[in-house]
Every structure is written in C-alpha cells, then in structure tokens.
Length: 132
Image (cartoon, rainbow, N blue to C red; front, side):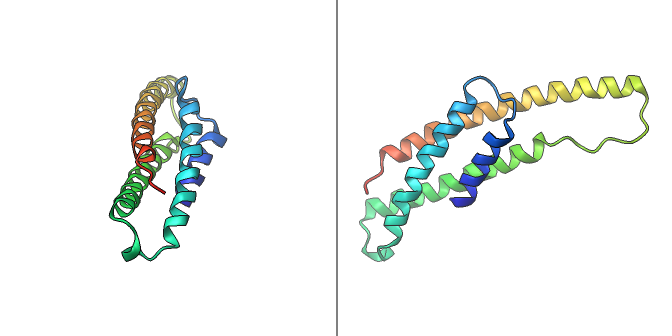
C-alpha cells in the first residue's frame, strides 16, 4: 500500500498531461487510499483469526485492489517514458517519429485516464464496504 501511495504521488508530481479530470481522480485515489491504509493499520493490530469474517474479506479485497492498481500504474509509468532515440536520424523520419509518438501518447493518456476512472470506482466500492 505504501509503494502504491508513493507511485500515485509520482504521477501527480510529474504532472503528466493526462486528460481533463484525471488529475482530480488521482488526488481522490490518494486521499481515499490514505484513509484505507489507516484502517488497515488498525486491522493489522488484531490477530487475523480474531477478526470478523467481513473485516477479513474487506482486507483481502483491499489487498487485491492494491495489487491491481500497482500493476496498472507500473504499466503506465513504463509506457509513458520516451524510448531512446538513435543519434543520427533523417530529419523527415525524426518528424514522422515525433508525430507518431504524440499520437501514441494521446492514446496512452486516454487509456490511463479510463483505467484510473475504473480504479476509482473500485476504490469507492471497497471504501463503502469498510467496516472498521
């Protein structure tokens, strides 16, 4: 969970040019995940076998969600970095490559925006089931 929070912070700090509203969604996720993390710390103080079944199910859901979110963010962070460019390239090829990269980044931003909105909905669902 801590690494996930730091990756979300990295997304905001780097200020990727995401679609409108996605930065707000990322901020919402940071805030909600901080709250969930605090609840998990309380749950962690109780031996697992002494927790109510509903609390254990919720904690497992949070764990699964955090893994899915971390995978999605890792994928995005890897894909958004520019690939190394060859030193000597024809000017026209370079311009065509730049335009292609711009289109690819636009599609990527759209994909990550949708993914973040999907994750936001899942986080809301898990947060609504919080019992502690």
